[in-house]
Length: 176
Image: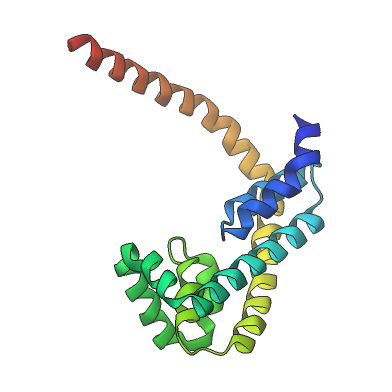
């Protein structure tokens, strides 16, 4: 398993971080704590990927506004929240959106539709991504021991939950 992680870990981290997810960086930080990955490379890979992903979404919306608006139709309330945040916080929303699940991919799309400066977005996105990657990567690396001990304790709780769910499902199908 360690060889698989060493061979494919950075590629998986790149692919996951491109979509804006930070859980991949948390796993990479914990795996760096165990010695399976390098924390500095993990932070670099996740940061570059996250930056490129946000730039891709921004430029997608900038060049294909109709397509971007169609993509965002099903996220009406979240888009409204993104616009409120853009009005309230201005350019700082680029920093804030990195940490809010559910709108972190919508902010670059919403900003791409508006007349927000592309150059300004590149600079703020670069700074926000560097800060995000260092904070999340280093925090997960330093919390590696706690996360691993919690995961080993949860393993037994998780097995109990799975057993209960299987029992309830089998009981339900037995009644049918």
